[in-house]
Image 1 (cartoon, one colour):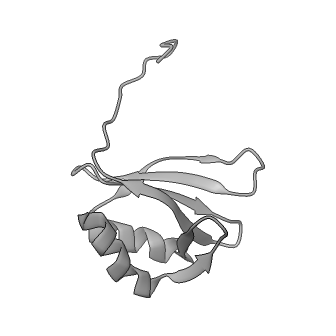
Image 2 (cartoon, rainbow, N blue to C red):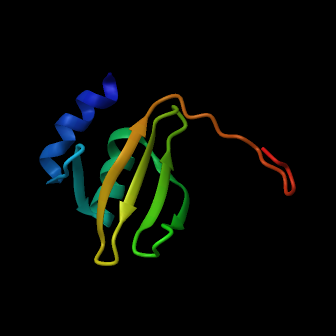
Length: 98
């Protein structure tokens, strides 16, 4: 619930981009990263390219357990795709089927 209220407050800093399914919050990548760090203490945990190669997907996680999935286009516009709480990191060993 805390994250929902914080996102609503943060939405003034983000450019609203609507889709048929849900409303997304978008901003230049550098500004989005600063805002997520400032509000939720989230840092980039990992990143990769989407299958089409046109988006970089990043997972940001805080030590408190909040997390955000951020998608960035080649022009530097980043949109929050998902977020939540209670992130639990797993240790995966090479060859581990987990």
